[in-house]
Image (cartoon, rainbow, N blue to C red; front, top):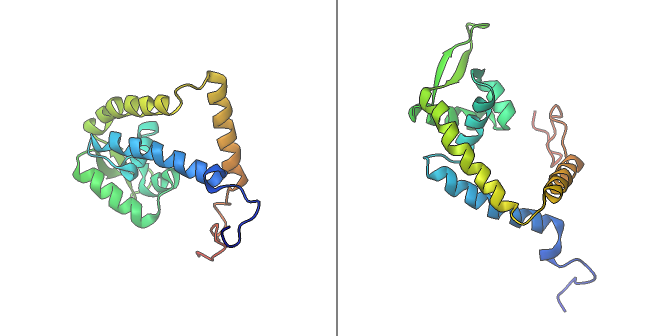
Length: 162
């Protein structure tokens, strides 16, 4: 018998492990799909924000995509070097620049999003519509159980980040 063993749930039956392992499998396919188009997750998250609403400031994109300041700077630079975005003067504040999609950035939406939809369909294959809705609801509830106040200077570790 292993040291410290008892009546604990086996690792591969715990919700944490199952969520992590399922996320890893979905992310692997997601990453492969994005790589076919010269993208990676961080780049996609910014494009996805801009596909929903174009012409935003870098800080607004960072907030909506949950990327940190240093990360968003690199992602924006990469997207710009790939010709997918441009920086334009902000019409309401001359000190700021808006990030806007180029024609190629707009075109990529109609190529990539159907592939992402296919990945989602593959992940949910064999689930009824009701089961899919229930799973999504349960995942949202799990996430809500661990939500951190975004205005709180302490992250989930309790460390002061201000």
